[in-house]
View 1 (cartoon, chains in turn yellow, purple):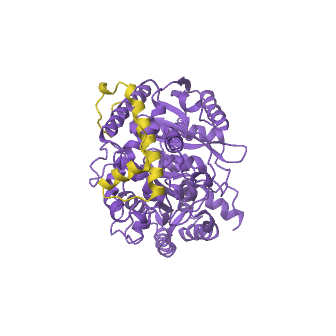
View 2 (cartoon, rainbow over the protein chains, first blue to last red):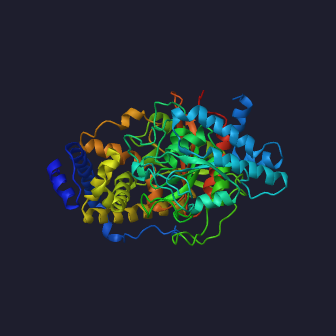
View 3 (cartoon, helix red, strand yellow):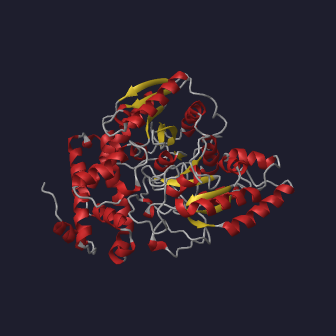
Length: 61
Length: 475
């Protein structure tokens, strides 16, 4: 996947009614690309073997 | 202030409470001593957003009269406490560290504040934090909090003021809130004790949410005994928070000195020996592990290969939850946020839903790995942070690349977020100092609802380490 740039980020944010200045859009693009890389790296894990249930207080250790 | 009153200020709350029962210390004397310290030190440290000096003195006089009549409200009778400004306090400004809530005055106490008051505690003030307890604040609207060991260094966050106030003896005990390390990180950087309880052990009612599925209120104190004391007072089912556990709350102080002879402790190699771990941190934590083995614990290394993913997974889940909470304000009041918070929240709001779902499944895998390890071991041991408190200036430069964003925002979080993702208790306590005299934090992670085991092992290390009497070099 190509990295997103500041203009991509501006358009995505506009869909959430959020307007961004240049400095914000540039840094948010770096942060979002870092997220996409980190979460992309999870694809090699056996994610289909578990259900994404939230933490429960009593736990099952 | 005389050295005698310094000694009083740095005494544990447990000790102060005992002195009050023996009529050797009065609530007014104690509150006055702390208000003097706050006046003298906090202009620089900026631990407090609000100091409740007048009301605290009124309460102290009442507590003194009650004590004179032999009436004791509870174990904290006359003991001053302060809480992170994320926790509601009736009639007192509660900002969550944000300019957006500059005029917000709740009408009801959060459950944890009400419980400490019921135990006789006296609220002395509200403590500074990173904006909305999220971390990464560039400009603090209520002043830059500073590390009491070196004021050019970060005190940690998000419960920054709680860590400072505990370590610098600006009150007897404090409360923070830990989503991904927000109690443990300031405890580590400031040289305090910070406990994240099991998710659901303590009510979140009246706590402004960072991320609902991981938020948990916990104590920051100067001693393990005080952490046990406070946890015993704030833990338990609360009908106002349906996620709280109905399990009975044990007497956490009863078994504190049971020792570690029967305990099996796993040392997480990815965190202790990882490439990101500072050599002085690694050495201090390894020394603590050896010392616990010397006390009779069975200590072994364990590899948890999913741990390095924890920071990124946590940030995706925490920040997307937070982005949902903040979306309308981000659209209508964006300039009232600190730029660091705004960028963090907007970035998270743009993560594709499929990627967030992938993170949720990865959380389940990480939790499974940690809980499986906790079937073999009673406790897991690691550094709280890969490094000692960094300079404040290191946080404020613009993020120049995605690689830098990953290192800066995900990497160090892999040390504290595993316990958050797994919903299990974890404590940070001092385990040494670097050559530059900055504290190093030891983290002990336990089974769900096994805070007693965590506290017992922490107490054993605390007694062995003998670091409780080392105080920050304050004027």
